[in-house]
Image 1 (cartoon, rainbow, N blue to C red):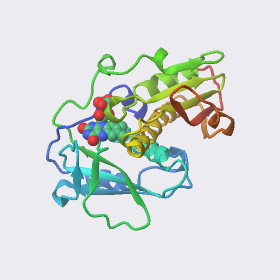
Image 2: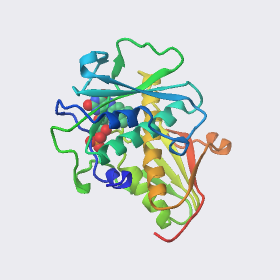
Image 3: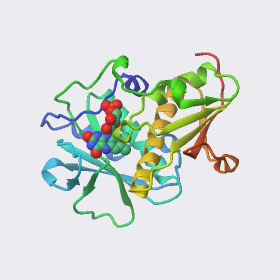
Image 4: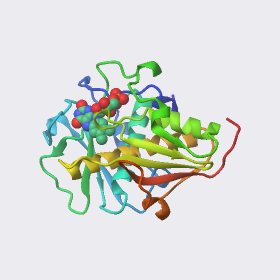
Amino acid sequence: MTRYEAIFRRKSVRKYRWEELDPHILETIEHFGGDEDCICPDICVKWKIFRDTDRNIKGLFQVKAPYYVVLYSEIKDDYLVNAGCLMEQLSLYLHTKGIGSCYQGGAALRHNEETDLTPVMIMAFGRPAEPLERNREDFRRMELKKLIRLHGTFGKVQRKLLEAARLAPSAMNLQPWRFVVTENRVHLFVSKPVRIGYQFQKNLKLFDAGIVLAHMMVTAEELWFDVEYQKLDRILEKDFQNYFYVGSLLILDESEKI
Ligand SMILES: Cc1cc2nc3c(=O)[nH]c(=O)nc-3n(C[C@H](O)[C@H](O)[C@H](O)COP(=O)(O)O)c2cc1C
């Protein structure tokens, strides 16, 4: 199975078998992601794995799992979007190896020995003790037509990107994203947070935005066309109801081969 196929089958796994994973897999996780998997390759990131027995994870809505992986990042522009994009690709990769995962948005580290980088997100993972997959009809997601505003033609390439984007996981399944689609770009917006817990919510929404970008980038890679992440100043200034602009994917090769 490819990471692209995993997009249409994955689900969060919340029950795990207490089983050791192959050390090779653990090593791959700790070195996961090349420049091509990031939207901001200049942002320094690091992965660290904790075992349940380390007792280093605390917090709300925590899933009990044999392993947790923490993504640390430098704090720079777009670091949350970059982190979401990387971690979702890791989650899809794990799925292709028969390993389940679940984001832990309310969790934190008890002890943090890292000084230069900040922990951004924790993800539980391990061999599943419940189904790893589901059918496409069983995804609880909004219809595509509710998520997009179209300007121009909706080509096959855009359809493929957005179908994969629609199925992306998000904190509390809020699906905060909206897409403005033009001839060769998909502009990504997320809903503005409400006042209570503003910064925490905003951080999760930006992380979710990274997840949705990951689904589109994996799709582009699978289907052999190139996309480039851009932040367009002229869109930053646009007001789009209760949404704010995150960034845009430029479709470089609008191949109609699909
Ligand atoms: C940023 C983020 C944080 C999340 N935090 C939690 C969490 O703390 N606990 C939990 O059980 N699930 C958590 N989830 C999983 C979501 O609830 C789940 O992705 C969503 O309901 C969609 O379901 P699915 O992943 O099975 O498609 C989180 C997901 C994301 C993307």
